[in-house]
Image (tube, rainbow, N blue to C red; front, top):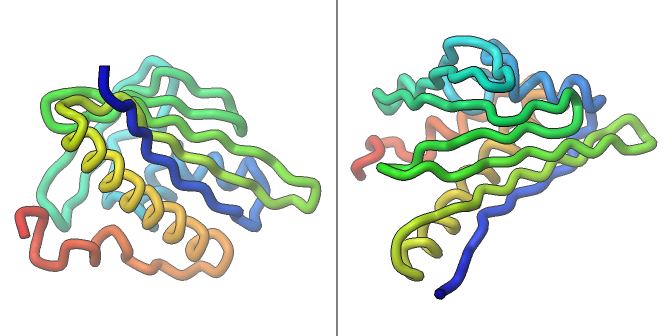
Length: 154
């Protein structure tokens, strides 16, 4: 049957869970650390478009489950196939939030699935680091934009 790799990135964000959760459902906030624009807030059952202007592309994202301040589950287009991305938000006693992002459902042979999982882990690690800098310090690090300075094909 082969292997079933999953991408996972996690980070403590020293902000309240409602603020951290909102950063992923409100494109006005998300565009400060991940993509450049979104067609609307993530809502369960709704498809929105996220765009990365610096790379000249956009993708449709469908929110499969939204549990306010707890969990987000979306279909994530990866080439011709969809994978799932799940965010889990765990509030901590000190008012901080632990965020876990898992991407699963990669297709292809074992080597292709592993390569996709490694790439996704890298990407979501940049997203969480950018989120942390923005919410905790008000700094936009441009990590996603600067990852491929010569474009995605490079």
